[in-house]
Image: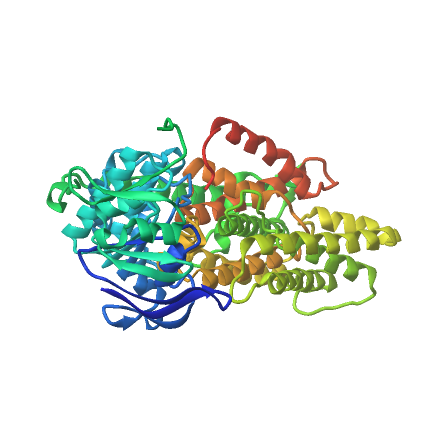
Length: 263
Length: 370
């Protein structure tokens, strides 16, 4: 379980996020939504100590992350960055195998066990078919799944994903999020996922936090959070929110503009 | 839906592990080639000695081996075993070993910088090592200082001071808070290099009779190498190489990018500092006696990458061996192509290396480097 207690984060002592409280439970998908610049990515970087904590406390299983060494933190928390840069000349399998880094001693080479774990992660993410292809030859969706495979190879307790579906086609968006959700349930991972698509967020998140200007604007289930007034307040967009015809989850529809005929 | 773990483990990952074996064989093969090339290089010179004789003389130097090498006939006159030993062991071998050390050091430093900055244009001289050393050496040649400390004369001593000083200045200029951004580091290196080479150029215009010596130093060459120089370069280069080799996996992970490397548990800033220090150590100790030998540092790691792939755990040791073999052969050519004149070895490395590299590039077109 990841807990944030009155956390402020930022660059060069300039806070980007203020007084954040949240809890990410095992087996639960926690969604972070909010407009560009609201602090979603910063929050994720703060949880892996890429960005310094200015005040407050971030803890993993009740341990303050400032007391955890970087390498041990990497055994607990895996990150899937937004549009990850991958070294093009390495094969997909080699990239996934890099996920074993925090588990290996300084001079140890990957053993059969590590190879098996990486292979299992590739099979689970449907990436094994291109295991020997070079990273430069992979499509956006394939890279994204590959980085999720690498994150699984870390055998973490929590997985943080920063807009894993950005720049993907709708079929790949569904594929990635189905995968994340089932891994979350199967392996009791705490999943924290930043999303900009509110409809995808509504379909996949168990709990949501809506950020605005570096502060928590609202917190709750998708039904509680995704309301027209909230979206108007935070995004400044006129929308109507409608129950999904099949599962009744909130579906955000834009109003006005575009191709429709004036009535 | 994702498959369960039980379904997933239907095929072992062994096929991908096998590639390691062929790389290990390549390493062993190259190590054997290095020995052959060293022996071959001892046979070349004003007195040409048969390979077998040379090999005998070299073996006789090893402990626990008792061979009395035969004497040799050169144009009717007999060359005694003692003379042979002087030619091979005292005159040729130190130069060959120094060439090997310098080649290995430059190749590995180049591979390290290219990996660290994820930049295919990086070479060991990126952060001002060469221009610092060049200015130091030029100053030493133009001032009447004489230094005799261990094997150091004024020129190598000033070259080392210039090289390490330049990198230290670049490093401290490029630091932003606790971090060392690669872009600032490269730009600071380029700017300081421009300043230092301007100073060197100015000194060259007023150098007068010393100009010839400066130009030769800047082009690089191994000329008169003594054992005392080998004994200084050897420990420095070996120590730096070992430090770099054991950081091969962090260097692999840092090919992702710095945030991802950190999220995989790598202490990025510390690894950067250690690798920069080690690469500077091996580069400056390699070039202080030989001058600025170019092209090995940028070409060898790329050639190795094109042939054996980007994994630094093989790239670094393979570059070590290929760099050593390449520079020994280039230096042998440099001293034997038009005797008694020697060509600066930097000219040979570029002249032979560039076409071969272009051939490799052509053959493997479209492949990502990193």
